Image (tube, helix red, strand yellow):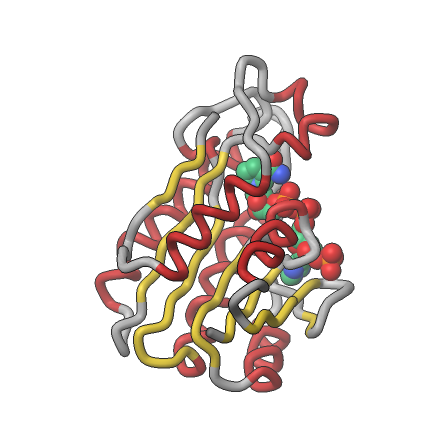
Length: 200
Ligand SMILES: NC(=O)c1ccc[n+]([C@@H]2O[C@H](COP(=O)([O-])OP(=O)(O)OC[C@H]3O[C@@H](n4cnc5c(N)ncnc54)[C@H](OP(=O)(O)O)[C@@H]3O)[C@@H](O)[C@H]2O)c1
């Protein structure tokens, strides 16, 4: 299978790349490094990415930014970051990938536990993650060519605890390798429209 991984250099993306590279051809895509580059907030950049890659079997996304700040202090620009990057970035990647995905192919997006369990400073992440999950539920009903779409929703990662532990009191972290298994289930399995939650 030819699998395009956007965010392949990241904590989650590198675990997914390592797991799937044993048996599949991986195209590692990043913003500043990789086999190919893209800015997921920019439609023209996304179009150029897929034009350069040509037909493939699975799109995996492990990237997308949101701002963390108190509700009463979040600026329009900070809200816009999550909307343009993690939400519309993933929607644009999905939409642009459709013509290049082979019959029976798949798309796997990323959300996160905050869609279900809010934390202080997490209102934008909760909103955006929830929207990504709802996009997947609806898009699964309309995708052509027998394409499937799912979203992986992990809790905080063990590898990220040095940065995020203060924001996630009482949350049990999981290693990125476990999150990679959820991506594997989405790419190689049969389900569509699902949220694969990876909790501690
Ligand atoms: N880490 C966690 O604990 C955790 C838990 C739940 C959910 N998540 C979600 O999982 C996703 C990935 O998190 P992570 O911690 O693995 O991230 P990360 O380690 O910071 O990696 C981010 C990846 O995204 C790429 N990227 C950055 N800006 C981009 C852009 N404009 N267009 C395309 N690609 C871009 C980076 O590419 P370059 O290296 O080339 O710049 C890198 O490969 C995020 O949406 C995050 O909210 C993370």
